[in-house]
Length: 73
Image (tube, rainbow, N blue to C red; front, top):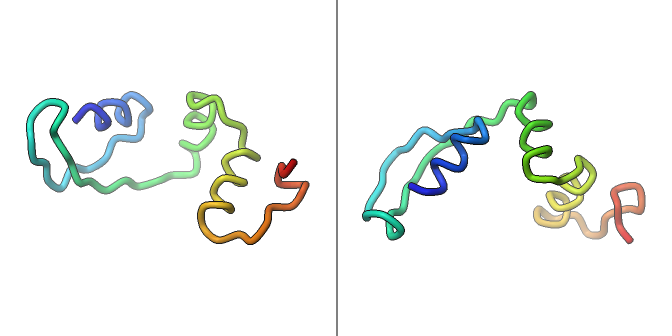
């Protein structure tokens, strides 16, 4: 449940569907809705730029090679 508290502090708390375990061993399953207006706040709190976030997303979900414009170095 520790990560649930972290997400709630960010203003992006999940709807918990189920949980098992206690304390550090607890595991939860939940659903998150993402509204675009949350993005700037999450980026700021994470210390990540919008360009970094978009590049990481592209790399993680199948982009073959990010362009220089997307922040590749």
